Image 1 (cartoon, rainbow, N blue to C red):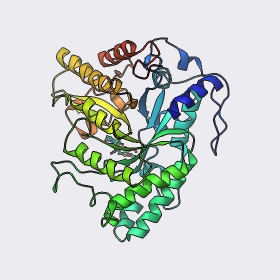
Image 2: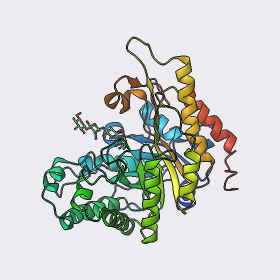
Image 3: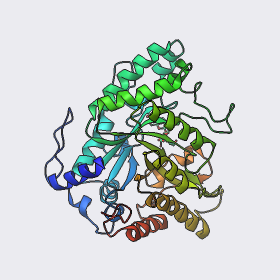
Length: 387
Ligand code: G3I
């Protein structure tokens, strides 16, 4: 796969990459903290599977000194071959005013990745959330043509800036409602300002967004991405039909991302592998893009119970095993660490402990379960692809 070639080239050539408009990269070998332990998630991963983590560049990577990293940066470099901007490439952060772009957080992500032989997943270009106020205000009066012009300019500017540096892009994020929403599973032609302006033919806009991204960076693999998109269900049925429609129309769609935001309040949907396999049968890559497993911890309970710790590990490992079982699964990304920086408690009060590292940056049993599965899956070679 393209990113495989590129990551092998990275390994061979140190960290020099086509610089584009970013600061020239250091050309030395990766720093010690990126080599470090032999036994790490990135080292145990099959050669055709990237193990990644989200990170907030603006918060965690500005001023990164490769010779004096923070402990969090040390773990990020040591354990992960791929990083995803948790927020830095979202509209509200990167394009806060009309014609005004703030690239510092995203640049920090790309430069950290270069320094540590990592790849970058771009996130995200078309979403109903974290749009800046100026988009929300303007969208009220947009014609579809005006919405398309704004979106195309953004896509070409952001994707173009990082062309050659991003191996997978979450182009369209959470574009379907959930089956419990009014009207059930259908495209978000109310909540998403761009789909709303083009509600007469939202699929045409989605397809063009992929075309613009592909023209801006022909190397990047372009994904749909959503939560509650792990197993075979009404939402993934809708994505499966949309994928077929886009592919039939020649849209450069390359993958389907399942976010993997699970909770111990619910069971595990063991149709995850079957869901991956049906998208793979369309010729698409699949990926787990934002894995975490939130744990309900009632007031007064001091942390998870031993049973919850075990289940937390089993759920992370079950998602990884579903990915390892399907050759087209190209990346498995956890949605940041440690728990203190997780989005979960803010959005799901009473649920926490979602990531695979403690706040002391110690690996949890979930980390060890994943490492064991990666170790069993390959001694550096994926039996799935025979390399
Ligand atoms: O940047 C502002 C800052 O200037 C301000 O002072 C501060 C005040 O609270 O807010 C900051 O914005 C925060 C933003 O992250 C940073 O970009 C928002 O409050 C906060 O709500 C927002 O949360 C993010 C969330 O997406 C928004 O929906 C989380 O960090 C992020 O982990 C989460 O990630 C999403 C994926 O992108 C898509 N899949 C679901 C996942 C979880 O919601």
